[in-house]
Length: 265
Image (cartoon, rainbow, N blue to C red; front, side):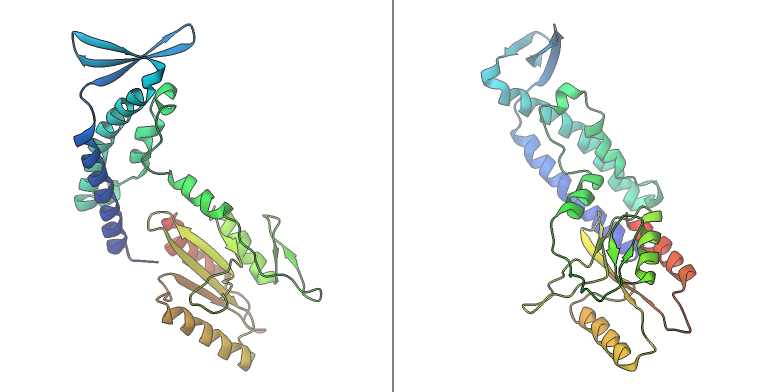
C-alpha cells in the first residue's frame, strides 16, 4: 500500500479537482434558487430570483429546475470540500470522505430525483468494480477444489483460508481476475482488491510450494515481473508463502490485512 503521506496528497489532489469542476460550473449557473412545493402528492417547481420575484417552472422547463437544484447542491458541496481539504492539510485524522458523500445523501428525495451525485459513492465504486465481468482461469478436472465462505471455488486450502480471512474483514476481492501488464498473455493474481480512494488495484499472491526449487524460481520471476511493471511489494503487491514444513502464517496474514488493506477500504 502507498504510505499515508502519499495517500493524503492523492486525496487532496482529487478534492482539488472536484473543487475546480464545481467552481467552473458555479460561474455558468443561472441566478436564483429552486423552491419545491408538494401539493396532493405532486411536486411543483419555482424559480426564486429574489424575495419578490417567484416564477413557476413548467414541465417543459424541467432542465432549469435540475440546474438550480444542482447549483444548490454544489454550493453545499463546496463548503464541505473546503473544510475536508483543510482537515487533510492540518488535521488528517479528522478527514472523512463520508461527509462529502452525505451532502447528496442528506438531500430531500424530490431533490435527489433531479440530480446525480458529483461522483459515485465509495460503496458504489467498489461494487461496480466487483461486478464488472471477467473470465477467470478454468479448473482442470484433476484439480482439487475448495469452497470459500463466499461460495467461490479456489485451488487450495490456503487460498480458502485467505479468502475467508479477507471476507471476515469485509474486503471485496476478485479471485484470479486477469491482469494485462503488456501485449502478451495476462497473468492471474490470486486475489485482486481495489482502493476506492486512489482507484488503484492491489494484488495478493500466495506461493504454496516454496520448498520446490523450480516452483520457487517461478515465484521469484513472477514477483520481478510485477516489479518491472511498477507493482511493488508492500505497495500494490502482497504475498504469502508456505512449504510442507512451514504452513501459511495466519497471524502474519492478519497483520498485513489490518495494516495495509483494511485502511484502504
